[in-house]
View 1: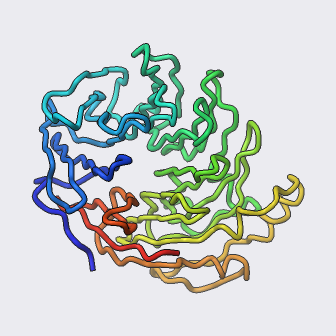
View 2 (view 1 turned 135 degrees about the vertical axis):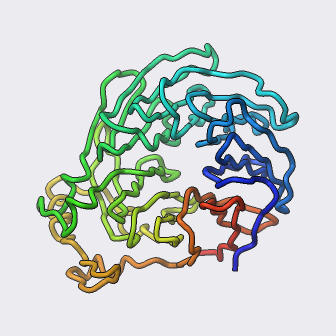
Length: 352
């Protein structure tokens, strides 16, 4: 049963983030931004200018009182100790921003927008040092832990891209349509293409997950200047709107348009000695499409390996998931879920 945090918003909550001290920030439609204490009481509220939707909020990894929020084409820097007017505004994107990311060193900020652009700001110099680009809406961007100049992005062009800030061009690009095993497209692929919605990188920095519109979750491993797919499984009956690696090993949370939040353990598949490219290719061929779905139900399993990839926990949230967050509150891990409502839902997450 979910605990509801209410009273912070009047519109649909779109994004969540938490700092190292347990303070949670939520952004909503119409420019609403709220801070929450661990008990679910609003600790501060702000109406951002122009009433543009607050699409992403991210705390500084080095300074927990510093919060970045995107609304429209604007990035606002806020001081959570005094949540009044923004400390500073940055106008570096030409279209609505979908996702913000700050690297661990707190030196670079990435802002991905509807034009497909990813603007990289040097936070010390307060200027754009790189402009990267997808051919369609860029939906998610994330820096890799322990690698302050390396980041991964994805978009509605179905591309997943590895970047290094020392280069203006991608190091490696994969089209999710090309990831279909043996080049075969699943039934309905043309009507439900794998538009990429969300990314999350594991704490090791070398493994990342991607959620897409076709309901599938794909796990990739970075090797040097490229990456390859390690695993693919049907995560949800509708689009996967959110993926989130937990700090512990390789536990992955996913949220979907089907109203479910699922917890997966992919450690047995990714926490292995690295294979040669030839063996990896053979392994991918062995991972034939695990199932077909008819009327939203699993009807066929074609691989023992895929068949065992089942969620360790299923949360029947019931509403389309906009954002998921995992943070420790009162000594226990909680999953926070933002959806189409004006409240934030909390679920106690049992220890794996």
